[in-house]
Structures are given as structure tokens and as C-alpha cells.
Length: 234
Figure 1 (cartoon, helix red, strand yellow):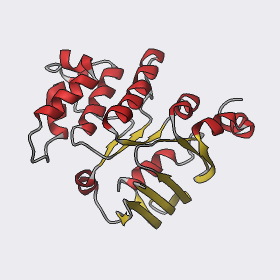
Figure 2 (tube, one colour):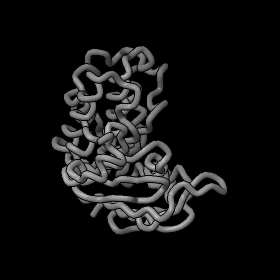
Figure 3 (cartoon, helix red, strand yellow):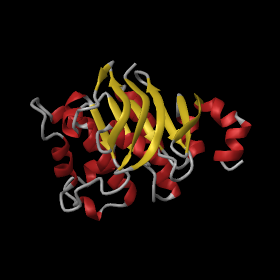
Figure 4 (cartoon, rainbow, N blue to C red):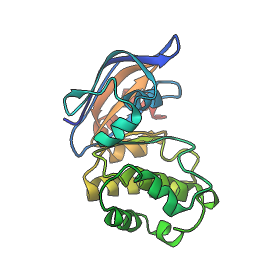
């Protein structure tokens, strides 16, 4: 098992957002977290990545506690996080953004750049273009590429399709599946397009009001009538 989140309570200041959340990610899985707005989905990822104060509980990575690790330390351990917004350096070119992702690497990175450009062919064509001049879907590819350049073992994705056109929504989710298949990286994803996310996921969790309401395989959650009525629009 690559990740265990055990009875986690976390939040902002005196306000608790998560109330005893427990989730797991196994090696090679795609796991989705879905639920209504304000349910604590993004807070879960930020807590794992050390961006939100963990008040109670434990986060284990390969069985070792990472409660006290900072985000830069977690990157070194093999975790990468793609936030929902502000996830590229707009004044830097595509290639410079990828270089920023590989900044702390001490190994030869050329083959990693080749892998990223193979995964995202549009980026190779626009490698000298400033990221701020790209479309929303292309910027998301840059963010993915920068997260993948360090060869992570666990990729945390926060709303990867937020604000994208329907064409790019399908393309980005297909890329998530391709990344998982081609690189073997495990994926924990928060996604607003719940049906699409669960359809492509090995397992899923449904959160509401900072608590876990359901967990099952992605397909079983799609087939659950109560989940469909309450959280998937019928």
C-alpha cells in the first residue's frame, strides 16, 4: 500500500474541515474523491501534501508517517501535487516550467523531458511558448508534465478539469489514465466530473461535510442508486 490516511482531522485556523477521514491508495491504482462543493475534497489532498494543518490522525506513505514532512521533502520522497489553479509559471516557457519541476533532481533529466513531450505532443511544439499564452488544457498539460518530471510514485490531482471546455475535459482525463498506464504512477484525484472520474477509477470515495460517506470500486459507486441520487445527479 502506497498511502494511508487514518482518522485525519484538519482545517484552517480554528475551523475543522475534515472530521476523521480515512482513505487508502494501493500501488498502481487510480483513486477518485468526489462529493459536493465544500465537502473537504481539496482539503484532503492539501493535508496529505502538508499544505493544511493536520490536527489529529496520521498520513502514512509506504507505512512511514509523513505528518511532519514539508512539501519539498515530500517531492523528494516521490509525491507530486498539481493544484487546481495557479499551477504554472505564466511568464516562463513550457520548457522552463518543466525545468522548474526538475530543479532538485541530481540525475540526467534529458530522457524525462523526452518522456513528457511524448506524453503531451502539443507541448513539444510549444516548448518555447510562454505558459501564460497557452489554452487552459495546454496549461494543465504543463502542470502535469512538471509534476511528472521528478518520476513520482504518487500523483495528487486537484480538480484537473476545472474550467476546461468539454473537449479538453475528456482529453485531460484520458491523459490521466495514460499516465497511470504508461508510467505506473499511482493517482489520487479530486474531480468535479464525478461520473467520468469514477468510470476510470479503480476505487472511489464520496465525501460530504468533511466525512467519508461511501467507498467502493469506481463502478460499484456508479451503480449505487443512493450515491447516484445524492451525489451524481441521479
